[in-house]
Image (cartoon, rainbow, N blue to C red):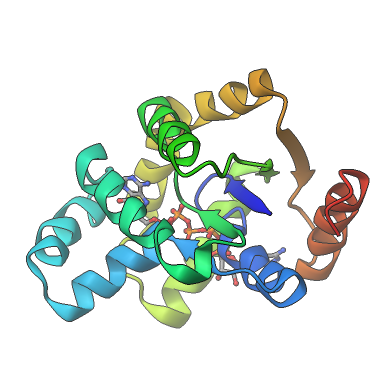
Length: 191
Ligand code: AP5
């Protein structure tokens, strides 16, 4: 099964992906995590990406496509994957479609997690105080929300037009949101 998780910063994509990994035994591929690993490793990509991420902006589509192409070609992604953080704009959605068509592994499901903006800002503020992620200051979080609204929100319609979109309310406890997601996947007969 090939799933894309969509949602604004702080909507719970990473949290729900971790639970889905346990349930579905598929790899969680998070482009944010891949970039943060590159930053930690101090690679050339990491050094460039850190500046962009700390401004709340997007790393270039070319770099992201290379990163995702490499990751999806790995052995563990052959049976399926839970993709989190990609695609983030229409160009990336089209590039992903092209890549999956070439690999003869089309997308099964795009799951959009909907949460109120102020709730997401609150969650990110809490994480900032607990983990100190460098793009979690309130100013950068609001910038990320703005970039999401301008560039990523249209991706939801893109997948709706393709007939693979489901929407899930991401408010409430982590467990409640996970039950809703599993409900959607069961209706689609994936689990
Ligand atoms: P990325 O790491 O993808 O960050 P994001 O999309 O901003 O998402 P977050 O990690 O903030 O939130 P999330 O939805 O995963 O929520 P989470 O589960 O963590 O990207 C970071 C940056 O990398 C981007 O800004 C960009 O610069 C770059 N980048 C990445 N991909 C790119 C791409 N494709 N193209 C270009 N650039 C790219 O939850 C958030 C918090 O809330 C956590 O503390 C969690 O514990 C808590 N929480 C979750 N659910 C609940 C709940 N139900 N109740 C209470 N708390 C909850």
